View (cartoon, one colour):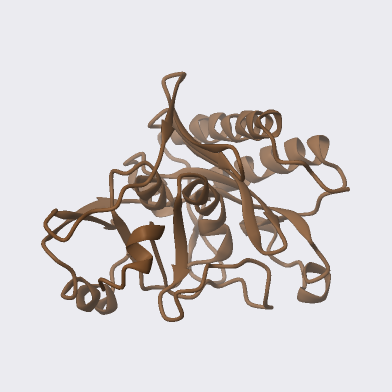
Length: 267
């Protein structure tokens, strides 16, 4: 079975992500939700698992023949994964550190990946009551308080102050060095995949992620960025980021920006 990416599918996936957000909020509002540490030293909460279970149940009902890869089910081996031409890639709770800090900057991420390309993506920020969604041929939109607005990336000129988005929980010497190559700029701090969404909606011009991420961290927002007219490329080769093309689920360092900015060779 091969899914057709259309508005109906996008809305159904949004509903699943919103349900997962509600499951997260039930735990977020507790006085003490408990934190475990996974084998890679990353944090895990009951909210991660509740969201995972909600999304897997929803997608399995919606598309029973499409495989699912989640951060919380990452033990699917490469020989199995490499046979997939279409699959769901999800991060049930992106920004667990932000969740623990209770700053609201965490998201539910659901992406449909086809032959390495994210063709549909939904990013829901439950505390912010905001969603970003987009699909191939559908454009991108931001939904806030029930109101939908079409979004698109923007390209700064050399004379503009460039808005460069960065992480609240991660930073690297590589990013500091990269920033020295830019024109006049200001940093915009944000957590989770919301950083990529800021590029999609034109509130940030550039997001250099010169640190490790996993494919489920980026795929949903990547689909939104593509639908908004921007791109995410390997920071070294400047080729588009691809998914499920290798055994490792780690992304290369990457840059998210408008296509015009990425092809202008300004940095």
